[in-house]
Length: 545
Image 1 (tube, helix red, strand yellow):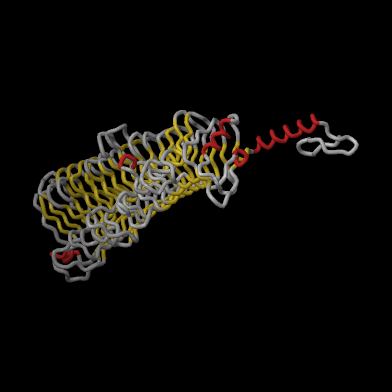
Image 2 (image 1 turned 90 degrees about the vertical axis):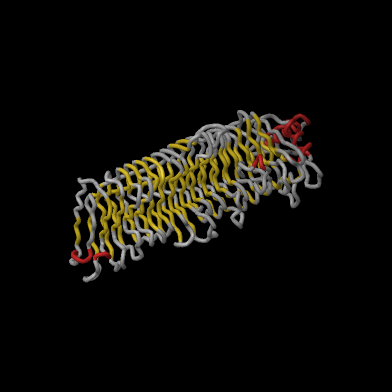
């Protein structure tokens, strides 16, 4: 008897007809092979004509073993579902043709993957309720692991579409539209994708038109959030955030994501009183565009700290956001957070939108601001706090002032390059500084300087200003100076000052390149090196010892 090439089924022959047994065996073999490749849910009564397809899907799950693959064929009309689907381990729900599951008339979890492993949902379009209330497309919870949600599309769903309260699962290459708009207050912290678990992977998702957070993590560690794109709903809504990292999150990798048009932060690490600190996370190589409050924010919002995180090699741009009425627009903001590294970020603005490139404030301790490039901010870097180290940064075209240090303890400001500062000066030091060292900074071209390249104001204690290099070409008007210091405490000192000031000859002494007025230590060297041939008329100082 001849048999088929692939499945080995008996072929009909006039001289050797099939027996009933042969026929039945062939049917069973064919049925088994088809089932292995996937069960068509239409066989169980799934139809776009049904008012509710839940009973048909539940029967298919009940009558098949774990590991079964279900295929949902395309239908011009959606499949309505008004209840919760609970898969068995290893079950797959696939649609290669983009079938639509419509749960818009049901508030709850459409898929509840609870304490099962290896479930996969792929290729389906989900439509959720467009009215307030609890609704999610997929929840993964309990001990569930190795589950995959990939290549799906989600629309609507108040309070988020995918909720993972489990570990070692995958959310990959999904598209979300108008999800997480106006959730109830208890759910406002949950993102379009929300993770509360460890070692989950979120890669390549696209989120559009969200009113609240795009991706959120809470009590979550060692997760990967990479290469996602979040574009918030037009209008810069007050609740919008791109990626929201809440308390109890550590060792997460937040990298290569894009966030645009957020009314609040692009990426925020924000602790509270509820769970634990936010530590050792890496936020790197992200692109944040037009985030109204901050591109990236590290904020201690409660009793737990935001410490030992790395914010590195991100690009932050602010060009078309509304100008805020208060001083709230930041490239990177560190508020009460400690021991964080802010390194190698590029922050750009059009000299009218971004108020502060990097701000350290509210008692922040031992943060390192290193190798960043800030272009076109009102203030490049603003620092209050203790033990801050600001080094090797490049600040260009600050239209108010380049750097301001005030209410600081034991800070080190060194090896920074500053060009084209605004009228507030290059390095302006305000009240209540103690033990700060300002050294080896290069200051270049300040055509509008009023305070000075280095403006040191009152209430200075135990600070040292050393090796200031200033290069300028502008003609200073009366009362201006390239380096201007006013100190009232004798424990401050000044070291070497290098000038390359090219003002024309005959400028009056009170328009000098250097103006020092105050009480300083006897050890102050006041070594002044100048390439200006008109030193006698352009360098002036008054020293009180």
